[in-house]
Amino acid sequence: MKPTTVKNILSFIFLATIVGYLIPNIYENITATYIPVSSNTVIALLLLNLTLLYWIVIFKNRLKDARKKNQNISKRKSPPHPLVAARTVALAFAGSRAASLILGFYLGAVLNFLPNLDLSPIRSRFSVSLAIIALSAVLLGLSLWLEKICRIKDSDDKPGDNASFA
Image 1 (tube, rainbow, N blue to C red):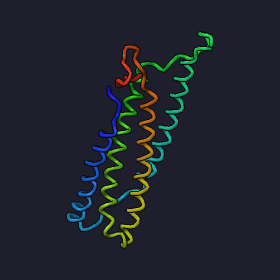
Image 2 (cartoon, one colour):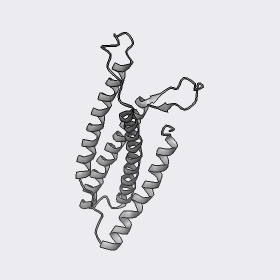
Image 3 (tube, one colour):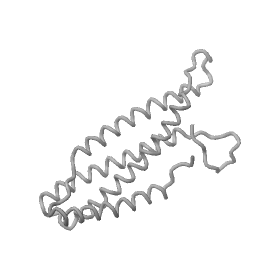
C-alpha cells in the first residue's frame, strides 16, 4: 500500500466541500428551513480523537519496546501481532480519508452559511461547524501520524522509494 499523499487529501476535501456547499441549499429549498448541525458530532469527534491518540501512544510504545536491541531477548517485549499492525494501518488510512471528507463537507457548509451569518440560527450552526472542522483537522493529523508510525523500510528498497507498512 502506498502512503496517503497531500493530493489524495486535497481531492477528498475539494469534493466534499462541493457537496457540503450544495446540500444545505438543496435541504433549504426542500424543507424551507436551514440544515441542522448537531453538536453531538463535536462530542463524537472529540471522543474519537482521544481514543485514536490513546491507541497511537500504546502502539508506538509497543513498537519502541520491541525494537530495543540492548535488552535481553527474554525481557524484550514482543512486537504487535501482524494482524494488529495491519488493522492499525487500515485504521490510519480510514481515519485520514474520513477526516478529509468531514473537514471538506463542513467547510462547504461554512461557506454556505457565510452570506446569512447575521441570522441567529446560522450563527450557532456556523460556530458548531467551525468546531467540527477543527476536530476533523486534528483527526487528520492523528491519522497521518499513525500512518507514519506504521511505516517500515524494506531492506531491498532503494532510497527515495515508497516505504511499505507494518
